[in-house]
Length: 408
Image 1 (cartoon, rainbow, N blue to C red):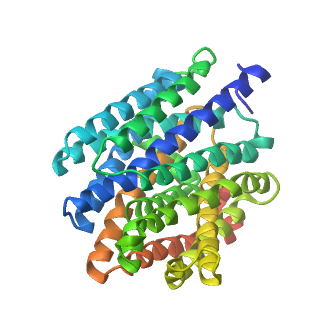
Image 2: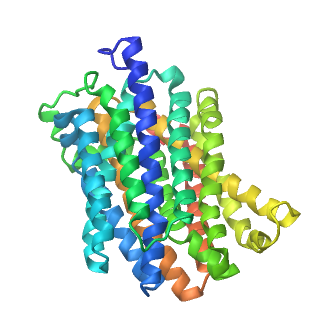
Image 3: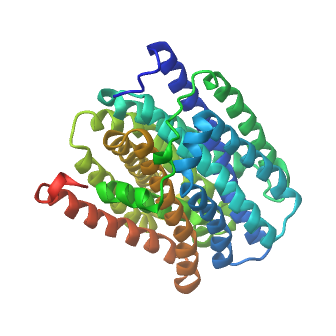
C-alpha cells in the first residue's frame, strides 16, 4: 500500500521532486568519480592506490548504511536528504583545495556518507509512497532520470581539466540545483514512527537480508561493477588505445549510462507485468555477456564511429549499461514490493550497505587485477563477479518454490 497520509497531488509532487533531485545528484557523483581517479594517476599513483582511494568513498556508504534504520526515522526523509546534500557540497568544496592522497581518503569517506544518506533516503522515500501496481514504472522513471544524470557527469568531465577547480565547481552547481528541486517536499515529508522498533540492531538488517538475499546481493554485484567502471574504464581504454583516446575512455562510461537511460522505463514496465525475479536474472545475464565481448571489440573505437567495428563496440556498451541499469531498477522494485515502513528503511540500508561493500571491493579488485595481469585484468575481474552472481541468482530463482516462504 502507498503512504496513506499523502493525497494524490501531494504524492505526485513528491515523486517528481525526488526524480529531479536525484538525477542532478547522480550527475555530480558521476562527474567526480573518473575525475578523481584521473587526477590521482596524473599525480603518479598506480591503479591499486587509486582503487584504495576510491574504496574510502564506499566505506563511507557502508558506515551510514548501518545507521539508517534509526537515523532516517528520526530525521525524516527530507532532513536526511538535506544533510546528505550539505555533506556532499562541503566535500566537493574541500577536495580541490587539498590535493593530498591521505587527506582525500578522509574527504572521500565523508563524501560517501553524504551520498549514502541521499540515496538511502531517496530510494526508501519513493518506494514508501508509490503504489505497488505501478511501482516498477515509477522505479523506471526514477532510475531513468538518475541514469541521465549519471551519463551527463562523464561527458562534462571529459571536457574539464582534473587539476583545476572546474569539475568540482560544476558538482557544487549541481548540488545547489538539487537543493532547489528538493525544497517543495519539505511540507509533505513522510515521517516513519521512531519508537523502539526504529532503533534496529544488526539483527534487523540480518533479518531483512534473510528474507531476500538474492535481491539485496544484486546491489553488491552492481557496486563492484559500477565502482570498477567509474574508476578504471577510461584508464583501461587509454591503456589499450593510447593516451590520445582520453575522450573515448570517458565515452565508454557515458555511452553505457545512455544505454541505461533508455532502458529503465521499459524495465520498470516489464517488472509490473512479468516475474520480477527472473527479470533480474535475465538483466544480469545480458550484462555478463556484454562484459565478455567488450575487450574484443574495444579496438574498433580507433576507427570512425560509423564503421562496423565501432558500431558493434558501442552497441555492446549500450547493452552493458542498459542491463546493469535495469538490474538496479528491478532490484529496487523488488525491495519496495517486499518491505514496508522501518523494514523498508532496513532493506534499503542493506541495499546501500552491500552496494558500498561492492563498491569498496570493485575499484580495489579491478586495480589489483590490472597491476597483476595488465589492462585485461579490468574486464576479466568485473566479468567474473557478474557471471558468478548470474549463476547464483538463477539457481536461487529456479529453486525458490522449494524453500519455505519462497525467499529470494
